Image: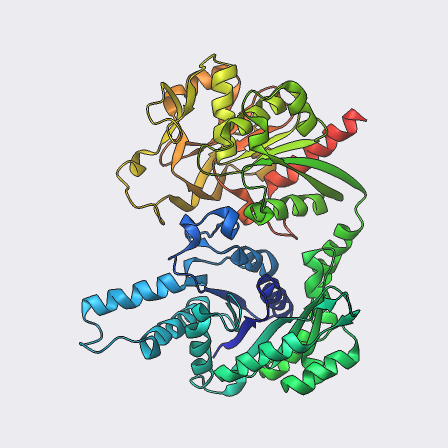
Length: 541
């Protein structure tokens, strides 16, 4: 029988429940136990696939094509375990399933209610993840904060769940809360935590562990006060103060004894953890030998979480190359509308590498195309991802082939030179949610290419999220101009990787390599991109 850890949050959102879950998962895995995680999101969207990145952050894509909350990315990176569609469940998905059952007559004419039908559906998802993963420990994060009306069915479901497992020792409740510092009085305040726990207890859930987020050290007497008022042992009040790197969090929690407390509560042998590899990567991250500056040119730079996996992949590659990656955020709209070379140089000239990530819609695209041209002409290492690769194709068509009207039919439906066009199987689709080319697909690489050198193999599998592709009708002309297709989907002859001939390092990919990078195992393309950027920096000095 699997063990279950339910992670809730109080006071305010954005406290890092996902990082807490991911870090605890890493610590449990380091003790030799199998782990997985499940994120419940209280919003009514079926998945985050149609939500704005500015509002919600990035959409993380799993191997099986699930469009998931960004916390699933944290789970994969920290635990080094692939997740799937079933590891992220929303209120919309729960209600859709229940309503579909009602329409089929599965409830035999009974009145469908939140309790028991919605709560039963929630519990069934928890059990399904446990069965499908065969993990020893399932970490279940409840999105939002205690007291939110949207989250009440999930809290009720996990309350019920504890009473349905063979032993009460099979379940642990971990509550993440805020201990704020009030500058005017010069004090840390425990009252928000007390109120948050009181709200949780009113639902019928008593936390076993309280993780206290704070921007400074929490004195022992305050931890004891929280323990007293919240009815938990003092050692189960775990401080989680701000750190320089996310990857320090598991080590800080290990030092505070969190994993040992959790294991003993769940009846698991606490075992000695093997954290040597994790400690080594944190050490390299804290004390790099050099630094490199990357210009990230995107349309969602107002919210850095919109490119979370890209940022983390750059950091992973930096750790591998013993370098601190400094990201220079460039709003692609600044590079549009008759932008001058002076402005381009001011925004991009100091960069050692230029990365253009994915995105949807025409806003900011012309700025991305201008950034591509600047990188190509100046010999600056360039990495284009999804729309970034398509921007490189449009740039080459316009400026190397002289096709001034070259564009994507995503932006100009009656485009005269559609060098990027809608995929054939996408043309009859009318519903936007969950209908893109999603998940992992194979790609065959050409020997001698930079991509092949990075991967060290002919055949790779990478995750996709797109509707448009390079139009093969223009491929021969593009290749004659130097933009070579060096990676294709063997089953559909789709261009997956392009490289610019004669450029130090110019690679565009249709897929999203950022979703497969790990802190201890950086993605090969990010690794080599940062290496090329470091070489470019050295050549400038």
